[in-house]
Length: 321
Image 1 (cartoon, one colour):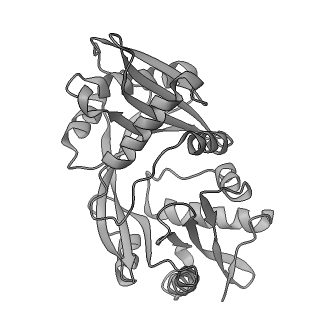
Image 2 (cartoon, helix red, strand yellow):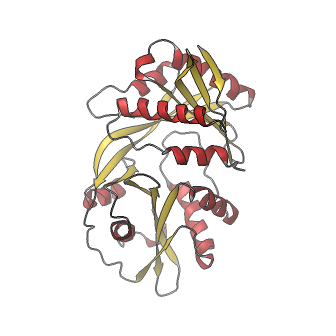
Image 3 (tube, helix red, strand yellow):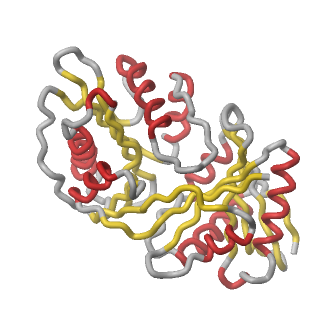
């Protein structure tokens, strides 16, 4: 077995990496929502000022049988490395995952990173190979979220956001809203539950937002709904949905209501607005996915009203030197 860094500009290597990622996840997780090959290439082949990938492959008899998706934040959380390891089901229990983890750890330490974190999933009522492996490697589950699924088409609950208008856009945020949108995105980063995860909230600047929009737009369409108070034009919340290119699924990402605007059913109204656009403009989508902390009772109730149901539990795991 050979462990080496993946050449992100080599088509055969990147395709093999993606094939292992897909096969490993689909073997363990029937409801896995996985990145497309185009999304993988876009993240690797377009350098970012905020993140640097350092992917590894395990090669046996000339074939890639295991991968380590290793990466480093460059401007925030510089004590961390993000890491996820996958091994083909036919090649497990041969030390391949352990060898990938050892090499990833060596590289992480060389970068001066004192901690690693990643995500693993557990299906209800069954064992999780990923969680068992992470625990064996010394990681601890520090935060959990339920992966929720809503089959489409679906009819959103009716709600009247009295005193607010819902503003929507696709892709790039209009210049006239960008400052308010960045403020809400920063608030989201501070408010989102992270359990015991050692992670510093990211400040969303206009520059960072525009960079993210440009990079994300290569592999995803996006829909944003924002609630604006009619009396003074102040924004009180937003909801963001992604539509990966080349798939028939959608991702309900952030939904935030600012503290002074809560208790007015804005979260429901915002989710309903993005869902209506997905239904009208992307009828090929058959399901929408979201993730919610089970202790976030208000958001969990909102998602339940829409018809979302839990299909697996995501564990954020972390190891500290």
